[in-house]
Image 1: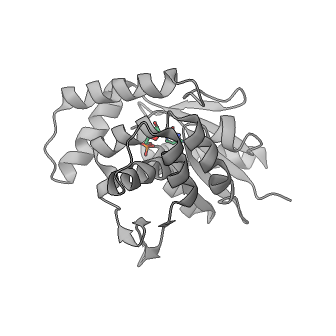
Image 2: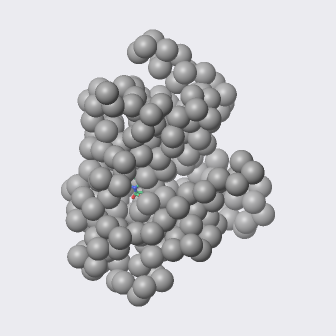
Length: 222
Ligand code: C5P
């Protein structure tokens, strides 16, 4: 018997990361942040001087990627070859590089098993772009989380401001639109809702409202 999976896919900035973390906490399930894996491959490529279009070498990196996601005092962190890269992989530039790496079929293929290994008892919340369409097609509940591009840019802006990082709302909006376009137009695993996904537009919803709605949907699915 496979552990149940809740997939949360959608464009960048829709709140997937926050919502997935809160759902995993509430359910006491494991969490897969698949975007972090693509960010980590791009990071490792920089470290080992692998070009971002060298598909075979990047797939090799994906295969052998030495990563860990330890939690200390409730604070999760991300280690690449033992080095804490939690902050380094979160920049806009790192996201941009991740999205380049993610367009390569051999890299996506190399990550499949690694991602599926996260599915363990009592359950998994999987956050990404293709969790419901490709990686966990038999998930118990598939959610496609969206918000308008303007609202997503505004949220990013607020996050950055709170972190004390300078940013411009209009350039954030442009970056979000460019990444949306690349993620939805790529040939392998493009960003789109699974046929059996439930789309939730969070433009006018608060975080607790989204968590409550998802919990309700899971209960309905039994
Ligand atoms: O979600 P996050 O912003 O961390 O993802 C970074 C990039 O990785 C995305 O823009 C997307 O190109 C890619 N990605 C993907 N498939 C996933 C998760 C992320 O292609 N399941």
